[in-house]
Length: 514
Ligand code: MG
Image 1 (cartoon, protein in one colour):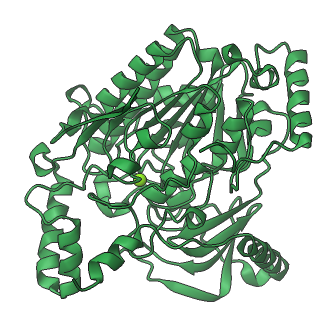
Image 2 (image 1 turned 30 degrees about the vertical axis):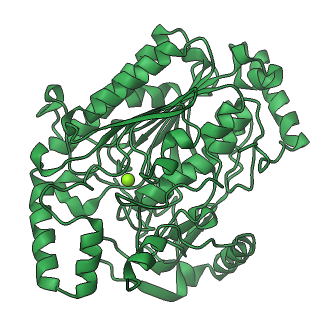
């Protein structure tokens, strides 16, 4: 936790940053983040707000093409900031994606992934390990107040909670909002049922669950809402269970605004990982029936209102022009949920898969007066936020990280340094992107949906700019591109030691005869 794993910013990057300051100054811009980095005083350090929706698809925002769901607040952030068209999460499901955002590291490097168990479940004995450094911890070393309001999903044991990993305070659900069913078997009972081979009973359970997802009632679920904070002599934790899920977005918003008001005179990091629009869908009364997009639309529109309320609070606290705002999603839409899930727009497939719809997420950066308004089609990743933020606050930019510093592109001084993106499903590399080209080694649908798993002896190749929906395999026409990406993959693999899965460890324990 002493930042010993952080590497110093290379001198060349410092030079780039300083010239960014000069360029911005010549353009008559207001105080710049680079200026803040150069002077490195508490008063000019920018605030950082990361808003992270759950299972929001690439096509679910007005600014990303949805015809019916109205998202004026996020769209305004996009119009006045940067809308990134090619921004990726590191995994197509919740827990590993969140781990990668907070650590700047690939889940396979940190061990925060699973092959049999894809995400963390309730009563997880392990959880987020002490050895990993979160962005909140890194920012704390630079004098930041850190608050988190929303879903964690990196372990619910006391030692794994956000307040043990850099956040001063946290209000939120510890895992997905569908993980505490009333009157249904819990995770361990389901694992044992699966092991028993009783397919009939398993099918009955899943059918009951499907009906409840499709018509969610509060009484079907008993999700816990945690209240946790760091105190002078330890931690103070309490739990409200069941919590009223119709109020989750509203309460996270109120807590975030309260946090902004309390910390307006010092640098702060606000992490706002919404529990929604993960199914079961719940929204407050004011949003019920409001959207043309049905219950899913209602939920997204409530998130949009939350984004607007947070922005207003920043403006009222007079810190808007000193605040980097990022809005993105943890993975693609849960297509298995049909009308209760989102859409990936023109992208192929959704959550759980390594097609574009699973991992390319709608992303907006905003910082009035500092970020050059633009639509950006350079590559970026949620893994890059760690390095980017640390550079912008004048800190140590990189650790043993998989992230890159996107600040030059945000400031409009240079292209994104990211030109490649690996696509992992669990511990396996399914696909790899270099420039506009994406190569699939393995393709597979998710949650029982097509296509069936297929390992490609001859990899499939798609040009994502000409064919964003991954429809036309052009590998045979471009053997030189196939060879080039295979070489890039070899370099990637050589630079990576895959850690054992922390998620699957639980399964091994369950399967060991007592
Ligand atoms: Mg998710």
